[in-house]
Image (cartoon, rainbow, N blue to C red; front, side, top):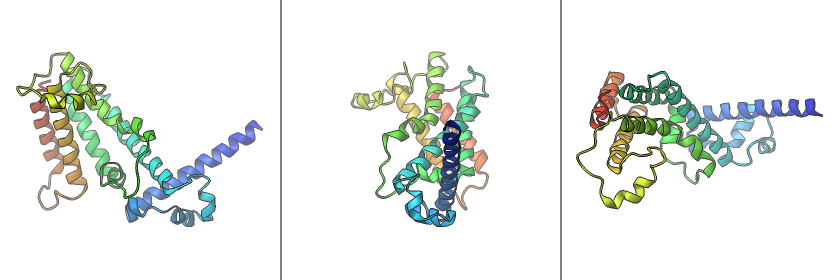
Length: 230
């Protein structure tokens, strides 16, 4: 019975992987809003009712694709940042930034799913949260480590006291870091993802040719703004 169950589990895992692979190809041609379980079933040669045993709804399939996308991006950032010396905070920041861009450029449709326009009618469940914060957890750890090491200067401008409750939402990512630094880091992060969005969604077309160099320079400027000297 154990061997039979293991064989069934293996077949189920293989079919689930095939379904998600086909769904990712659909993202490239139809976009997230056009994702269709029936179309996936047709491509697999399955009756449409059979695919619902693996994904009860389109939203369940979307959730799996979103979690996979966040995890793939997070893993890429974690792996790249781990190659840097712990005390080299600026190098860690730049390496993590480049890892975000490299993954996004290599997987534009998956990046669009997680950082593009919301899918009409879809609301991400709590299941996505752990995967969603993997990349920013790395960025937060870099800032917190730099602050504790005295390698991050205190911003001259304090965060408005009205932002105190919002600052608390990021406290777990950057423990012991003052509010002024939290908001400086958030500004740098939004610049990072805004820059990547512009590139992935074609806003730099006919404007910036050497996008890798331009991106590195921009992220260096953000490192300067945060006071990451080393």
